[in-house]
Length: 534
Image 1: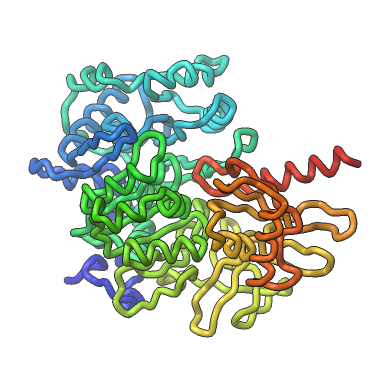
Image 2: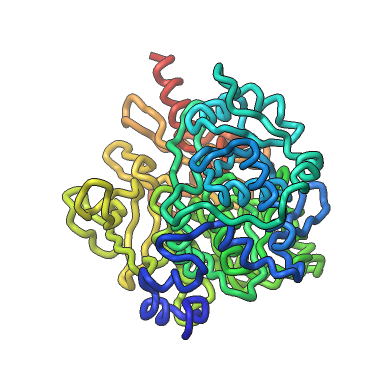
């Protein structure tokens, strides 16, 4: 009987995707299911087939097999049992992609403990806040981060800090290379923190083992993963995209995935994509933009890289039109947006690889089968095509009847039912009565050949309430003439009132740990300046 992985068309997705269908892809059922078994153990057949390819920033590649990870995860699970770890205990780990990372991730899950990935670039405040929130029994890191990790130990002596090095891997080899998972489908498997600043503690999103089943809709229709793909996701597995879409989803289908370890470098990424003959990549918008700005166009044209893409997707934030054009030119496959958040999952997709689905540049696509979304006015009525409103999702909420919940994003639809992102609800700028979109102004400025990155906010202004201010990253020398050029460039393409009245050149933009431009930081800075001036 055909499974969802056997279908590739949009029509088949609408016809066959239902709440029961993803369960057919797994060994487990609604009562008994374990992520580690589904992603690793059942694919460990003694063949040495690769599970993860890691492109390290220093230039070397590392390939880990399903057999290797499965054996190590089982041994680590036995070791956790020997340490007295109980079902429901939290095991945090702050590691780059590596054999210890995957052994710890899947080993903890097998015992019924809860895996808590931590971003490797967290500073002491960010780490201590999260450790204090999830209260892990053990925090696993590398030798370089051990001193930082020890700074998160509380008065009760927890967490215990363990260094994941060759010594730990040698130590656990005394235990059996098989393990019987202890979890039930509804048991918690992962605590995932969304990205935020060091002083703001985002709430941990709690995922059960059965979340893996729901994830298949995003995998099949957001990233287009199918058996036979050579997949790659450069996003850190400390974040939702890198962990769920880049790691768990492909491995659950037995698909070899790829990832990046160390300080990100766009040229190193492109070499890995070429060397690994990647056919399907899902990345953050920032990754694509950095590849465009890497100065490798001539090298691509010369044949230094050979790309094999047939599916591309991105998430996190919209991609500007100039970067989409670059992707079309050099990767020769349309980049498909998938929209969602750690809290609500992926709800809008572009069905990569579907021959009967037209990808519209810049569009969020259409709803994942089974999801219902609508763009609404402030009074709750649906917006007309082309009219900007708030993007709402129909969903059952805990303790409440099903109803519309806000995504806190602005959007619009076109006559064909495609959704378009119009910025966060707080990215709308109202200046002297004019309503403007920060995203629209950014996208226009990014078309200027000298603008590498750009962020637009509303800055306080005594006369107009707010004025448009643009922060620009550029290699060109700042000057008054350059500012006027950017202002004219924007006005000529948008409207006479829709341009940045203030332009500030900056070496870099503040970003969340996940790589998104952090406009809130910029808004807070401007508000503080305005308050100090009064």
